Image 1 (cartoon, chains in turn cyan, purple):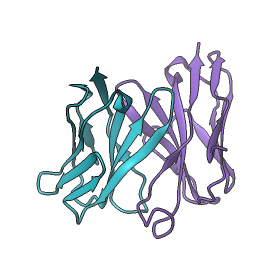
Image 2 (image 1 turned 120 degrees about the vertical axis):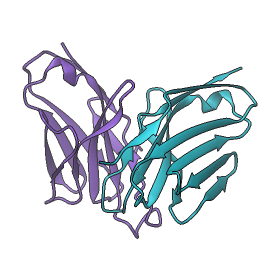
Image 3 (image 1 turned 90 degrees about the vertical axis):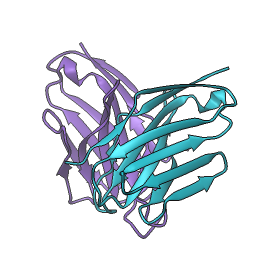
Image 4 (image 1 turned 180 degrees about the vertical axis):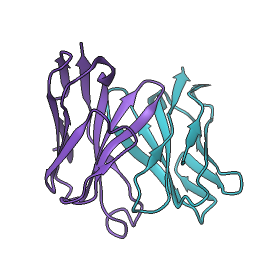
Amino acid sequence: GEDVEQSLFLSVREGDSSVINCTYTDSSSTYLYWYKQEPGAGLQLLTYIFSNMDMKQDQRLTVLLNKKDKHLSLRIADTQTGDSAIYFCAETFSGNTPLVFGKGTRLSVIA
Amino acid sequence: DADVTQTPRNRITKTGKRIMLECSQTKGHDRMYWYRQDPGLGLQLIYYSFDVKDINKGEISDGYSVSRQAQAKFSLSLESAIPNQTALYFCATSDAPGREGGGSNEQFFGPGTRLTVL
């Protein structure tokens, strides 16, 4: 079955770059997502990438997709304390199947 | 106003009680989902519905049931609550591909319901 794996914790210093990694098993995944969950809140979509792309940049966020290795990463440049949250990787084969989420990576930013 | 609302936000109940969690959305989306979140386990899909007449089991549907009363409403029931159903429950909505989100199937989440079963 489909599976999405992430490391559970990451700690970085304020101002440094954060890189959160994710691996997935379904080679037919069409959309891959990064969601952010702040304390006491639901998940919010940060960014997504189509499987026919290998990179997407949006301000401080850079998403890299390596389809061969089924590896997705999220880089946050100049990490701020407000970036402290849980980050979920998710994938879907098509728009007609529910998303499969990873277990989430808790990012802690040290001032 | 929030696009996806959940009631109640917090609930404490006892083993064996019947509980209903409600979700409403004003986004006009056809698709709705229920997830539970446990620390270190991420999000697990309980049930989902792609339209009013469609109900599908997710990966952990045992002990739960759902009702899609209208396009905007999707409720989750625990017929006889047990302590290992203590968790954070999220409702989410999405539109069909090709419409909002440019076909991204983005899901919009409610704020969550914290349920404790004693």
